Amino acid sequence: MFFQPVLFAISLPWTFSHPILSVPELLKRQDIDTTVLQFALTLEHLENVFYQQGLKNFSQQQFTDFGLDANDIQNLQLIAQDEAQHVQFLTDAITAAGSQPVAECTYSFPSTDVASFLTLSTVLEGVGTSAYLGGAPLLGNKDFLTAAGSILVTEALHTSLQRAVVGAVPAANAFGTPLSATAVFTLAASFIVSCPDSNEPLPFTPFASLSTSEQQGCDSSSSQNNQVNMTASASSTSTPAFAASTATASNPQCSHKNTTASTTQSSQSTAPYTNSTIAVAASCGALSAGAPVAFTAASAIPSGSFVTFVSGLMVVSMMGQVDDVSISATIPPSISGQSYVFVTSSDAQGKIDDAAVLFGPAILEVSLSHPDPSS
Ligand SMILES: *[C@@H]1O[C@H](CO)[C@@H](O)[C@H](O)[C@H]1NC(C)=O
Ligand SMILES: *[C@@H]1O[C@H](CO)[C@@H](O)[C@H](O)[C@H]1NC(C)=O
Ligand SMILES: *[C@@H]1O[C@H](CO)[C@@H](O)[C@H](O)[C@H]1NC(C)=O
Ligand SMILES: *[C@@H]1O[C@H](CO)[C@@H](O)[C@H](O)[C@H]1NC(C)=O
Image 1 (cartoon, rainbow, N blue to C red):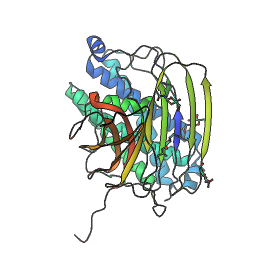
Image 2: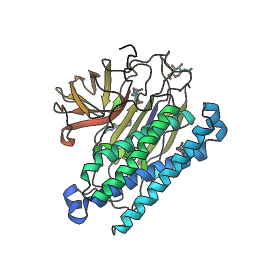
Image 3: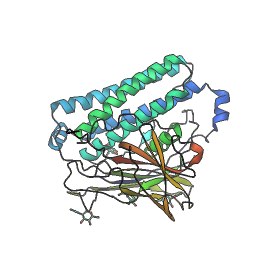
Image 4: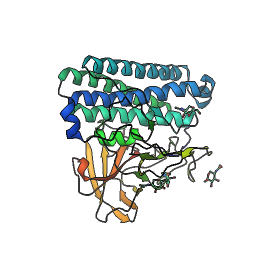
């Protein structure tokens, strides 16, 4: 099945109704397990609304026209139902633990057509899976750990189903990729416009943004031409300020058509905001290990910075070639599937610390090398 390359560039405010509490402050008041569950519920709300909207926005016929068969469409409906059940499950668990579960927020998704909706679903399911994996070690209660693991399994199955539907390799890495809560929060925040005042604030501050700066390695002969590029600017203050989103698809090498959508909601404030960026090049032909790849950061990158690739259980830093806000490096071996890229201040071989992160994560889809049947 064909998949149209889709590029998004969105700018959204991330508005907190409370100032952000530091982790120690928050932990004084709250059991960490509850915080992790609240964070999980925040992500499940996001996914739940995403699928509810998508199934409302696009007709059965549009999915069929894109190339989905009856099974694919039923799977999509089942995924939506699963996300609603995850929301209910976590809501009940947090209530049982004596806290008030966070409520649904207002979101802005940069999906404008079936292609971008399905591509974004692969990204969100992948991030969701990485969030549960990265959050698991934080949980003290083994019963919660099993419950979280149980949701993780389902998120990973969703990832696989949706990747298959858009023509990507369903399981492109032998290992899942754990992400820190701050990394996940940075990605999630770019879709959140505002949350109810009653929501307990989460103790995370997003990282500064990083995006893939070019579409390297596109190959028009590939049937896996997915490209998603979302650049979001997120307000980290409580002042609702700025919401503009544009989604464009253009790819000189592998685009069949362009999709462009642009909305501007408001821009009445100069409140400071940080930009968080998601850039995905989902198998635009041949982004693979050994290829050079360049990224653009929200501000000047210190020379001597590293480009750190996180994929499966691999964390590999490459010395970056820095030019002001740009940095480039070669994709190291063993990076495949939906991978995450950070600019770090130090060589983070094997383990990435939030404290070393200067920018990121950008999301990078790296094609895996197929096993050679003759060997
Ligand atoms: C659904 O359509 C609405 C209205 O156009 C749009 O704001 C929203 O982002 C869309 N959601 C998804 C998931 O495509
Ligand atoms: C992503 O969008 C940004 C902002 O429009 C742009 O500068 C960048 O080149 C894009 N990246 C890709 C991979 O297209
Ligand atoms: C797609 O967009 C690019 C950049 O805006 C433009 O150069 C190109 O002509 C467009 N292609 C089509 C098929 O409209
Ligand atoms: C964030 O993006 C906006 C719009 O693209 C830009 O004007 C602003 O300078 C960026 N801010 C930061 C902190 O990078």
